[in-house]
Length: 236
Image (cartoon, rainbow, N blue to C red; front, side, top):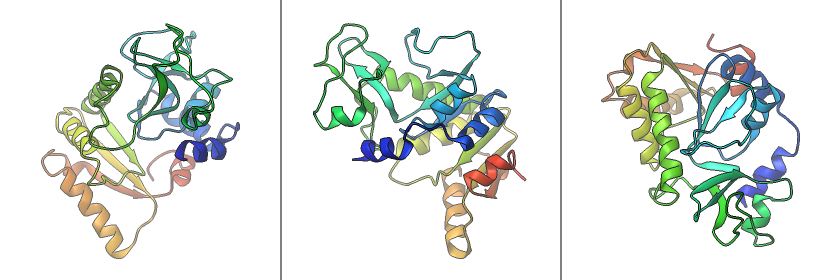
């Protein structure tokens, strides 16, 4: 159902807002980490000629061009990824394959390596404690790269994320990555406007999550929508 809703909502149009995000933040050297399954940003990056590097553990010719690669780390998988357990390989869905048809049992997916369909599935991982148990080498490599990005960052923009208590692995990843960052100057937390007790609870959750990182004094809250943040070109 989630895959179907995402697919219908996306349609085939490229988001102007995400194109602007790709132009202003991605193409200027920013690495992007996301928990989203949708391919909105993927499309925008390709549209702006920003070659997408998903940091899979084994190199492939997927999307290979002469463009400089820009890292897009999708920690929960993606609506356009298929994984073959036999080859331990990820490929994009081809034009005739859809995630929704596979989930509904209407069609099979074929591995681009061995050609098998019985071991190939859509690589979308729910945010549960066992999320990294399967497809371990693929997803572990992506999560490791995300940790390296956080550890080496000078500025971090966290957009629309509330540190949910149930997603422990994500909390640990972000907290430890920022803890080990030596060059970190600022953490910008971008979230839609909040007021009163809701705002206080939101800020307290961040302070608690980063309590042992030594970086709490670097957190700056930006109460903007994603649209306002992108159109303003970043923090005000």
